[in-house]
Amino acid sequence: MTPSSGRSGFSAARLVNASVIDVEEKEAAIVSVHENGPEMQACMRLNDGTQLLVPVSLLSEEEEGVYRLPFSFNAAREGSSPQQMRFPVMEEVLQIGKRTVDTGRGVRLHKTVSEREEVLDQTLRRDELEVERVPVGRVVSEDDIPQVRHEGDTTVVPVLEEVLVVQKQLLIKEELRITRHQRAVVAPRTVSLRSEKIAVERFDEGKAR
Image 1 (cartoon, rainbow, N blue to C red):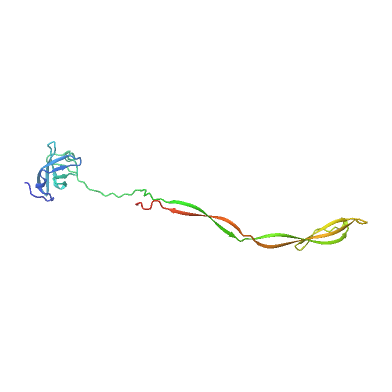
Image 2: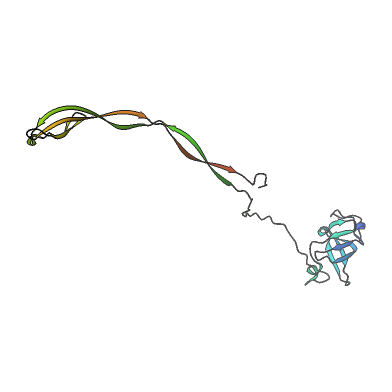
């Protein structure tokens, strides 16, 4: 019996004489279509004359008059008899995994050094000596030679001189009065200070992740 249309949605008239290509790109021709129970089966003749019976539901139409078989003819007939064929049943399995991908993104750092000038107002201390000459003119003996003495912030340094008299005597000629004064002096100075800046340049902007 050759039905006009089967449960698989294929027209028997279109299948007869159509070409079937397996996964090894080998070709066979459909010589007839039969209804075997709930499913239609196509009888194919290989180039070597071998005939195979294949469920029509395994065929996928590639173009007009050409169908694709998802396995090889050899796999269908190995260990099979003319009354019993083996057909592999395939199923797609979804596998989820992850891997590290180099996206090419990177960062380039640029360091620049800039200089600026600042004025520092710093108070410094400076010692100044004021020398005052005070005439004395007093005669002293060698046993009474005056020593250096301090009168507050003033250091008194006696200056001795020998003078010729009837008898030799020591004469205090003068005294040096040295007074130390302190005053605040503002000494502006210009110094150079350096600071560092980091500029970030992204050279991979626009690349897809």
